Image (cartoon, rainbow, N blue to C red; front, side, top):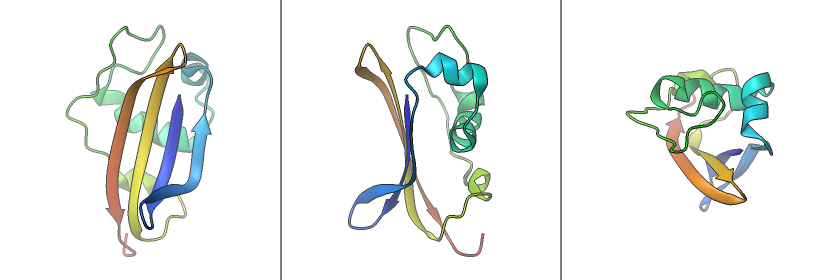
Length: 106
């Protein structure tokens, strides 16, 4: 599993977070990373990737990222993306890309 925060500046570039967990089930058991928690909590009601054993088929449906969840992070205004990649047997199986814009007056 890999969760990245990117900021747009001549394309999307890594910004603040690039978190890799070798075992998604281990993360789901401990939930010990604040940024990953924000991303996972936003998926909970729209995905079947929330407990182990992981399903054979992943799904994310009717998802709209709650940008307000990022208010506690020190993010300046700008265009951002969050990429969430889930791999099994060293092969990417699911890639979710979320794009959003933050304004200074949040």
